[in-house]
Image 1: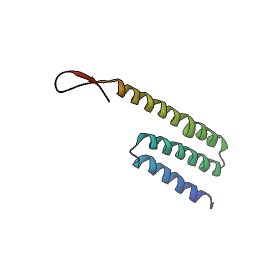
Image 2: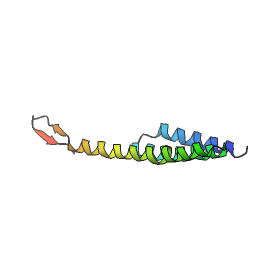
Image 3: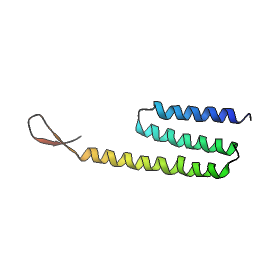
Image 4: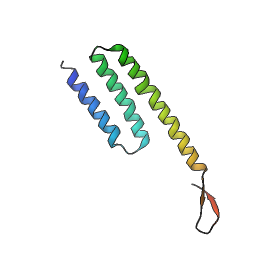
Length: 93
């Protein structure tokens, strides 16, 4: 029982870090940390199957997918063309 309170506090801290972070890459790191914290909490609750599923999905697959999407969005933004006030088009920088 003494292990549950620190783990619950860790989950609350990592969840708060996700919400208050404004930089998307930091949010992804916080999501991964939250997945690890939840996995540890599930192990403390003696649910190893749920803990392993959370470890795989919550701290590995989901953050990786978010990073891939962030990389593709940043690539798409750099290839857009921006119209200048004088009417000519210019590549976005």
